[in-house]
Amino acid sequence: MDLVRSTSRDTNARMRILAEAARYDASCASSGSTGRSGSGMGAVQLSGICHSWSDDGRCISLLKILFTNDCIFDCAYCANRSSNDRPRATFTPEELAQITMDFYARNYIEGLFLSSAIQQSPDYTMQQLVRTLTLLRQRHEFRGYIHVKAIPGADQDLLRQAGLLADRVSVNIELPSEASLRRLAPQKKLPAIMGPMRQLHHGILEAKDSPDSRHPFVPAGQSTQLIIGASPDSDQTILALCEGLYTQYGLRRVYYSAYMPTNQDPRLPWGIPPPLVREHRLYQADWLLRFYGFASSELTVPETPNLELDLDPKAAWALRHREVFPVEVTSADYWTLLRIPGVGVKSAKRIVANRRLFPLHWDTLQRMGLVMKRAQYFMTLRGQYYGEEDLDSAKLRHRLQQHSGMNRRAAVGQLPLFPDLPTQGAHGALQSAEQAASYG
Picture (cartoon, rainbow, N blue to C red):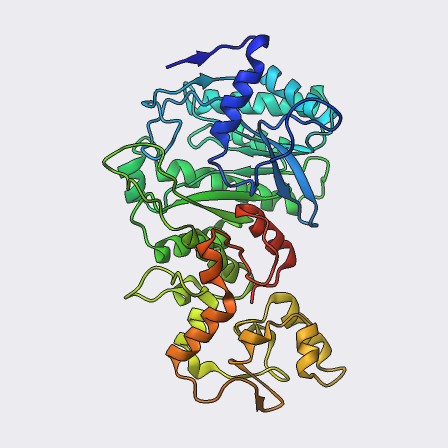
């Protein structure tokens, strides 16, 4: 394999290699920059520039890069696995810190997303990442956003240091079950992944209770990523795992990445990748877990443990529980309103806040953000039902599929998280929807 060595002349070559290697990590919720290349006013270095979104809705440009892609592990699904014959590259902490500052000084980026393959050992790799962050924070006095990937199996003190230096730390689970890890990534152990998550969670809770705000610990929280379709794990298994991560470890986000075949290995599915709509449905179900009061056990049924691809999980749940509907919007509580297809978090809050002040009308509900073409089949307004009478479940399913527009969008590759919001492509659609917070 070709190892690109650390000389100043090959910086651009290493940037291309390590930025390309980092693109498989979806957990910074980025969409790659596609600006104009070449020289001249406004020209930017495209390698490694990606976009993420802050909690207040701002779009943030990040340098997304690996410290090294020279890995000692041989995970079947990973493009950077040790057995792959591909160019390898490594930065030093000093080089990567200086590159970050150079990009920041030119206003190309506002922050850094730093990950790494495992070089030599987990401890050695984590030491290099911590050294990079220390140089940025202390020598260069960089106060921008930093998201760093923790290395499973690294020393706890190194993880603590990273938590004090970074805004967000994530530990990628990657595969949804211990059996899948044993089969596809035998060098990785589930306790080595869950242990850092537990430590980060405890550190975050302790920092919140501490009156000393000078040394915040992972102030933007922790996240993780799951690869979907590389293993036979069902959506039911995936959602139950994620529900546990949210409740037990306080994760801010779980990111789902549809498996893209990059290696030929008898343990892996080869040829046609899993449908992208499956990743899309998992994001929708994840939203229901975090903001809509659903339990993972409600979103699938034992006889069909995967989410339906032709209908969003909330509408699918409503069709399985038609005895719950119609719901009277003038009197239902907040959590019941959230169960109505077409009603989102913002619109449910507006209904509860305003129905005490003035009578609700059809056009009023539309202005509040309800998607009435779906909600009409599951609600009444002062006793009046506006949907078509006597629709059986099959016909109602057809109506919901028509109104969602998913069949048309899926055919051309557009998969917005929320069909009634504008798309920004792949993970960008997810982020615009996250800020709108109105999944119906």
